[in-house]
Image (cartoon, rainbow, N blue to C red; front, side, top):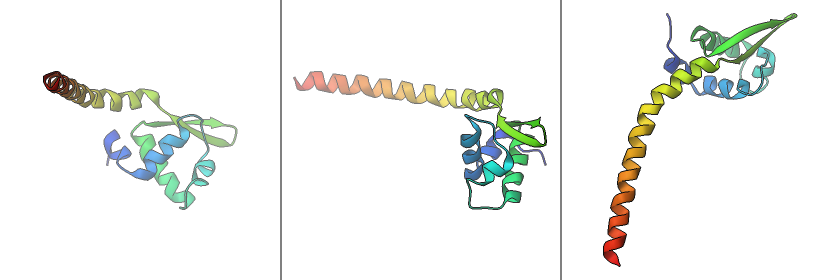
Length: 106
């Protein structure tokens, strides 16, 4: 089953993994050290994130390092942008109403 990026980020552990590797590529063992779970469980989460292309793997010697795939994260940001715009407009309208009320009270 092919998952999409929103299914991948729906899980709190996968979001935590994304946060961990956002600044620095890490090995699965290094990632697993940050969780109270098995290495196999972390590997499963990494496999899902890799399938969705949210993380990429890079072989360095005998180790595999996982890092964030910025292009895919941008897809999430682009989708969220529409909601950001809606809420900014709502807040701007609210600011205008509050300013009008404040003027009327003076």
